[in-house]
Length: 467
Image (cartoon, rainbow, N blue to C red; front, side, top):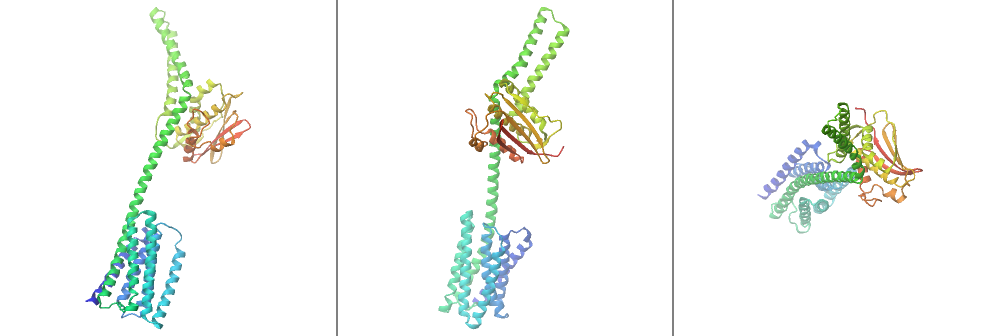
């Protein structure tokens, strides 16, 4: 009965290994390196166990020395497969060393079998299986430590037990227990049953490890996506707050700018009302006054529209835009403040469209921040002047903003653009940082440098094809 049971164990384990390996081969292209290592190891296990079953019909080189050497190699392959889960790299050096080591071990085993006897080969095989199992358990331990994969911890335990069981087989050299592979004693049956059970557990645990790894990766991807979404949401809120802060500083200018058309509307409306009451209404004058009222109403509405468009929260929308329109909108937005501070503005001539791929609101915020910094820089200068210069290259567009201020110190230049760094008492320290982030996502850049006439802010963006 023992003979039948041991043979059955070998046959069953061989069939399971060959079937599982064949199924994996069908999906070979979709397997990563780790899974391919385990697939090859599984096929080797099936072949070597089948060769052991037919040991009586095959030469011992093919049914003893070679299967033992290949079994040690498959243990190493399994360890390498686990190692590849956390340490990617070129596989060929390790595989070359494994191939050479396997050939050398098979040669030594065959020589010992012929010239020394089976007792020494039992020590060699048991030691080989134990050492390779312990090494595989170490790779599983390292992977568990790095990934916290609980099945890797179980794999480590199974490999250690497998190594201990193989060390116990060595005792047969000294006690005579279980020396014959298909012996009829209970010790032999217990040893092989334990090994085949552990071998099946290895397959199951590896599949469980990969399922757990896949679940962890999906969870990490979901967490990363959630963090990215939250970061993007906070960035949008921060950018909106920065825009509101900038407009808040210039609120006096906007109030003055709005007050002019509103005052005209009120004065002309009161004049029309007075003429109606006194009966002195002149039709021609009334038409003229109404035209002025409508024109000033449109002017006020345009000012409000610019402010609302600039500060309203919206998701960035990448599109092909004309830089001229962005510049005109921003210059119209800051015009009241330029007038209030008596700052001269020199605008570039842009007769032709300048196409860019960006979000118009975000790009206007960059230009607004740069111009606001320039206005702060020329405050108190003998000749307050800001100049915009445009240069169109083959691959990019460069917009330079020069100011006639005193320039920046080396320390300020080095830290400019860092979050929360500011030289202004009322500043948030986020304007340039947000501007740099905006330009980075479009493949552009923002740099500051000193010139002989003050500071130069360079806004550079890739050109886009014409719509």
